[in-house]
Length: 57
Image (cartoon, rainbow, N blue to C red):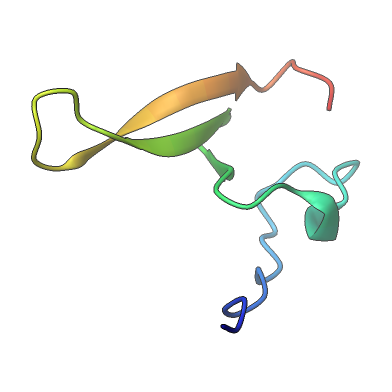
């Protein structure tokens, strides 16, 4: 099975972050790193914050 498409360059991600090295399923929006998780009661996925803007990766 193929891996899917590559992550496109996102100009909103801080410049010191190597975008090609980001793990699959981690996203950046509104000054926070988040991942999508299944809602505990079913239905839509929810965004779970992994780290905020000040975190060092």
